[in-house]
Image (cartoon, rainbow, N blue to C red):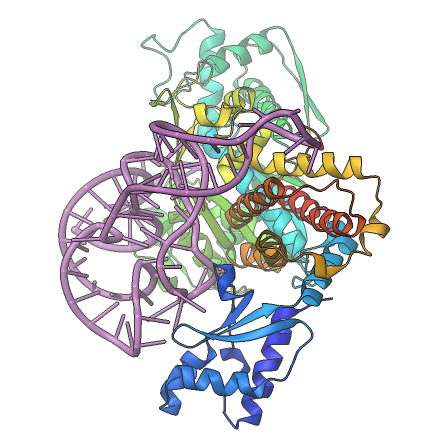
Length: 555
RNA sequence: CUGCCCGUAGCUCAACUGGAUAGAGCAACGGCCUUCUAAGCCGUAGGUUACAGGUUCGAUUCCUGUCGGGCAGGCCA
C-alpha cells in the first residue's frame, strides 16, 4: 500500500538526522496545500525549527532540501513562502495512486485503525410518542454515516436505538389516545394538559378501535378495543408508533442492529442495582425523602436526585443502567448521537458510571451533539406538519425532497452548527442542488466508461506520462486525499468532511470533463484518461456510500 | 444569573484542528451545446472572518473580555 505521508516523514527525518538536527518524530506534520502551485504535500518543519536554531526558516528549509536526494515519488521539492517545503508528485507517483484506487476498488480509502474493536453508535433514540421529526432525521443521517465511517476505519460497529418507553411521557401518550377514543378532542378543556395533540393520536385511536394488530421486534400487539384499559392502550400506542418510526427509518435507508427498551432495565432490576451500587460505594445520601447522587464529586455543578420522594427513579438512572449494560457488552467506544438539547445529561451519566467504580474511562461514552434544524419554504419558516401538529416530520421531507437529498443536506454541515433546511433548494432538480452535482459526476463517468469498451485490466496499462494537465494533476491530488478524509471524519466524529470532500472532487471532475474528450482515437491518451476517471468513479461511489447516498449509473 | 454551542460574501455553508492569496453553492452579470449526459463548464462582481485586546515567525482557528443568536440549568424526559 502507498503511504506517501509516511514516506515524506521518513525522508525528512533522514535528512534531519544527517544534518544533526534533533527532533521528535511527532513534530513532523505533513499538510495538504490548498492550491496545486504549492505542491501535493507540504511541510512546515523549517518554520518550526528555525527559532531554536536561530536561523532564517528559508535557510533551514534549503538545508533540508539540499540534503534530500532524488526520490521516485516526487518530481521536485521546492522551497516556498516563509519556509515551507513543498513536495510535487512525479508522474510515477501519480500513476501509483491511480492504480491503487482502481485495484482496491470499494476498499480504497479504508484503514484498520479500529483493529476490529467493538464500537457502538447509538442514535435517533426517539421516544415512541410521535412521528420522527426533522431533528431525528439529522440524528439519523449523522449517526448512520458515522457508523459507516467508523466501519471504514476498521471498527466493528453496532448501531443501536434506545426507546424511552417507561417514563411519564408514555402515560401522557396513553391518556391522549384514550381521550380521543372517548371523543375528547385537543380543543376540549378536559383533554390532558400535557397530552399529545397531533392528528396521529386520532389515527392510533381509530386503529385501536378496530382491533388492529401490529408487529414490532417479532412481537405482535393486538388492540383490545377496551377504552378503559389504559395499559392495553399504552402497549398498543407504543407498538403503533415504534412501527411507524421503523418504517420511516427504513425509508431513510437507516437500519439498526439492536433496539433496546428502557423498560427492560426496570424489568431485570438493573436500575435498582445501579442505585444500590452507588449507595454501597458511598456516593448517595438521603435528603428530604429523596435519594441523591453526589454528582458534584465528578464535576457536576450540583447533586442530582436518583430516587424521588414518591419512590420513582429520575430519568438519568435508567440511562446509567443502560450505559453500564453497554460497557458490560464490551464496547471499547460508545458514541451517542443526540440533539444538543440533551447536553446536560452527559455529566450526569458519566458521573453515575464513575460512581459505579467499574474502571470505566472518565470520557466514556463519547457524545456527538447536533444543533437544531429549522425548515424554510418560500423563504418562510415552516413549523408544523398537518399530521404531527407541532413540528415538521421526517416523512414530510422524504416525501417532498427524497431520501438522498434529505440525507445529504442533513449531513453536509458540521453537527454543532445550526442548520436551515431550505425545501425549495433541496427539491430543485437543477444545479442548485449539491447532491445531484455529485451524483451527476458519477453518472457521467459511467456513461463514458460504458461506451469505451475497455476493461479494467486494459486501463491499468495506461502510460502515466500522458496525464500532464493541471486538471489531471488536481484531480489526482484530490483522489489521493480520500483516505486522509476518512481518518479525519472519524477522528472528529464529523461526517460533513466527507460531504465537503465529495463536492470538491465532483467539481474537479466536472472541470476536467469539460476541458477534455475521452472517447478519442489516440488509444494511449484515451487509456490514461479513462483510467483516471475510473479511479474518480470509485472514490465518488465509496464516498457516497459513507453518507448513505446512492451513486446512480444514469441520471 | 451560570454552563455548552454558534457568529465567515446579500442568503446557505466550508476552510484538512495554527499555515501561504479565507473558498464553494444560491442569488446578480457576461460567455460555452452539430462533439462522450448543459443536473455541466469558463469568466466578472461580492470580505475589517461580530467587536476589542492578547499569545507567535504566522490567528477564521488558541486565550481574555464585550455584543448578538440558539440550547440547557426540575424530585419532567
